[in-house]
Length: 199
Image 1 (cartoon, rainbow, N blue to C red):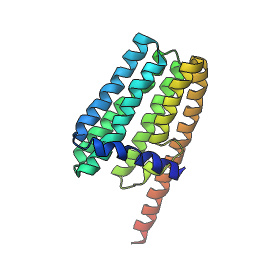
Image 2 (image 1 turned 120 degrees about the horizontal axis):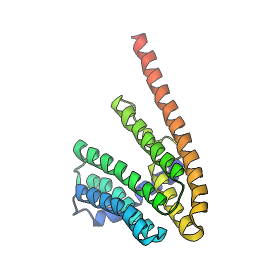
Image 3 (image 1 turned 90 degrees about the horizontal axis):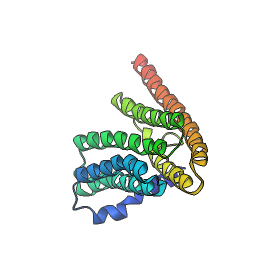
């Protein structure tokens, strides 16, 4: 799992070297724009394929902005905050589009909530000094994006009912990831408390 995740993270570097002239915040904004366009595209065209195209472009920009920032040596806390905020808005928009394509609103809502919770756990943990959350859980961001795109394709090929089954699988994986990350953080914080008590 870890090696697959690492390969997914290295993949954008090839494109990033050719997009290094672009400012990372521009790529972040472009990714957010594509994500925000996904629900209107889904509603107006009723095509999961077109919606998947805009969602894919959004995810590509999201993968590129960080890679470009590192290549340019311009990574900053300000850029990280902008990227994180754009990611949350993008995630919500891309998941919402599935409801507009006829998927179960309860599944869409639950997937959106748990996706936010997973991101919140990481952000809150890092604010408490606990790192390494990007590697914890079976449904990290890279896999979550790929799974969402596969749901769009399943919808295109087989319809909303099959997409709902895939959403249910994603929901279960997200729930497991919440538990994994929660336990990881609690263990890390517990260890620090024990260390502090020895001092």
